[in-house]
Image 1: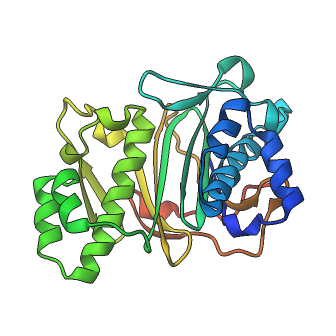
Image 2 (image 1 turned 180 degrees about the horizontal axis):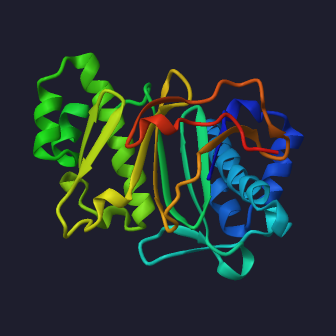
Length: 264
């Protein structure tokens, strides 16, 4: 399981941007053309080029060119690799926010990733009752304003990552999911009608940069969970080994940690 991270401002050279654009399929190119602001267009372009180059890096033995990956969506809009194009059991999830793009790729696992920037303008007081369980909301409303911001971004990304891993999108009632971050440990619960095996999921809450929160959710088919390998990665360039690995704030298994890069 590899987590690929990229800062969009690393990709500014016009030729580099053009080569990233060449990787996209026609539907992605059409979506890219609809952005009005250069910052948003570049974030979309870099993140989608990141997915394609990450998949090719992860499945190097399959030897698929980044431009050759083809995707389809399930009934709820979750993207996945067309099975005839990819390695069996290969799954991915993408997120992007101002200043950060991230993609997780895993074998034989349901995965979801979500990130948010601290600078994002969110009305947390209005949104909290819509996304939080009663126990989460009680803790949130009793906290200071500074702690509330941290709590909201943590819960928001955990829940968004879980909906991506489940592949149900907005059809999953996030207010019925309950997370409690106690020190470095994440506790998770929900009604059986939402998830009948909550203990089969593993959650990680990280800060890849001081201004970003990122949550990663996994459910493995195999009994043994492999270590998470993280890479700062630039599409069509490769790994940046000088960057700091993401800070692990909390997880369901805090002792596992996050490796800085994949083994050679």
